[in-house]
Length: 266
Image (cartoon, rainbow, N blue to C red; front, side):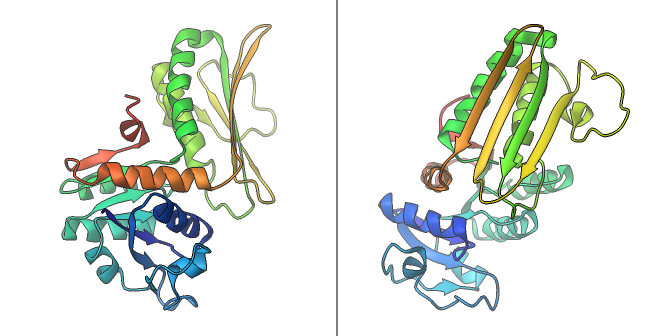
């Protein structure tokens, strides 16, 4: 039975992952929280609402990683890179769902993944990853005749913008159109900015309330418009996807993978 440890175990996402681990018939081997967190020492299953699991929430990263086959991490880039480094030393796989990585942090992650299999994905949802594949086909077919705008909505606690999912959508479209996303992404418009360029990809952000996550990509042409939308109604699709990824990544060759690999969508 695969042994899965969860980082950020007392958080909203961590709790849902713990439930998903139990539902998938896997073993929760460890539950990690930041040092001196008020719930350290509590049973992780009771905190997650799925009954006692006999695994106490710990603040000892070394101990938690040592006892697992794979660590699931939905925290922040800085924390994820620290956890990735230790997983590399311990030869443990890791699944990272954190978003907001800078290009330099991505390069560091690739360096740290040379000795272990690592999944880094901005969105673990099966539906969103199907959207990534569809977006590539739509963009290739429409070419440069349609303007592309991406709008994402999230809860008011989200710290990064645009969302990692929106950025990946923009990257997929840019790649399909032969553009450099970092050069064409337009994340703000204000004042007299002139006409829209053909190459730019608009990235618009909305924050409010408890919205889990909504993304819409608009392909806007002359007299017609295509909209591809995905709306998350619950965090469970992310948690189930992360456990599916964890089960897949154990035993893979060292390197960085994403959910397209897990789902066979390449």
